[in-house]
Amino acid sequence: MRRFRTLLLAAAAAAFCACSDDNGGDGGKDIQLAPGTPKDYTIFADETSGTPSEGISFTTTGPWRATVAETRAEVSGGSPSWVTVSPDHGDAAGDYTITIGLGVNATGKDRRATVTIECGSTKITITVEQKGTTEEGEVPDEGDEPVVPAGVQLVSEVYCYFNDSPGVEDRRIELTYDERNRLVRWKETTNEVVSPGTVETVTRTYEYEYGDGVVRIANPEEDTHFTVWLNAAGYAERVERSRSGESADITTYEYDSENRLIRTEQEDEWEDYVWENGNLVESRYGSPDGESDVTRFTYTDLENRERPDFIGAWNELPSWYEELAWAGLLGVRNRNLMQGTRGDGEWSYKDDFCMEYEVDAEGYVTEAVEYGLTSEGETDRSNPRTYEVKHIASRK
Image 1 (cartoon, helix red, strand yellow):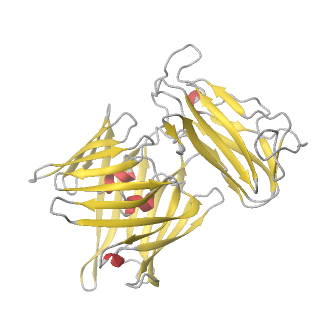
Image 2 (cartoon, rainbow, N blue to C red):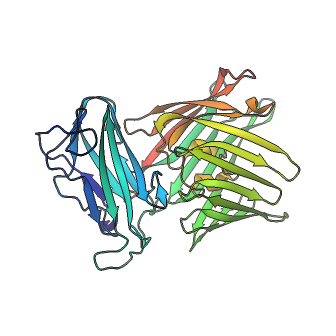
Image 3 (cartoon, rainbow, N blue to C red):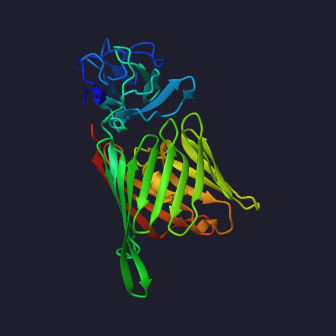
């Protein structure tokens, strides 16, 4: 599609020149850019490929990584969902080419992001500004454009099992997306022990229907229905869950200026969330009768590229309703892959865990292993839970 093409920063010249670490020249001692490479790009709202053909390429003296941050005054330091960089890192010295993917800007406002490439003591900053209007001065309509940038891998299946008992208490999640990369079907198949020696396969499905500012979710097996009202950023603001023969439950969600979820609230309970460096680091549960609980989260150095954030969704962090989390309706995801959780209750260690990951060359998770903890806080490796993850390419 013309309005959702990949912004390709292609290889330019074989010759490179030295530069300073403060981004004032064309590179540095650890990164060398092609001569004459621009560091600032301005494009219209309906365009995502506006750079010169010579683009940007570089060579490094060692491992490197690229990070993205939004630079508008009201949204600073966050990792914007409308920009992706691929690849976003390299594990060794060599020549590299970066691809930046942008989404159509239907907000009516200019937006700007920076891509910072770091290697050793050198930092190179690339600025991308996308106007709020087209060249004709119009605000584009998203129409059938994808809601995630091009070049993204979407989680299509997660298969979870305990290593000592495969086939028992297994759980498989299968995700189906529409042409705009929105989740339209969530299917869960579990093997449940119904009696000693007897395992029964149970299936649940959720169907997602998108309207103007609202999402409706239906689970026919349990006759459960959600009506999700969205805020201007497209995240759940108010949710009504209804089940046959029961009164409806109302849940509200509150976000900060970077679209990070900071509070979930129902009539008789609530939970507040604390974020640091783009990651959820603490949840604080409370209720009118004084019940409280604090859970703390730690993270790896690995970038969280998962859409949806399946570890957070699987553990209902911080959603309460995993049906919303799997659809990405609860704010921006954690910047890094979660390492583990620790609760402050006497028996919280039973729910605490720590994670280890295997990722592919692009940084997407192929396998995650979850270990429980002992009452002393030590890793219990006796019967870990393994997640096998499959991905599909987003539609462009």
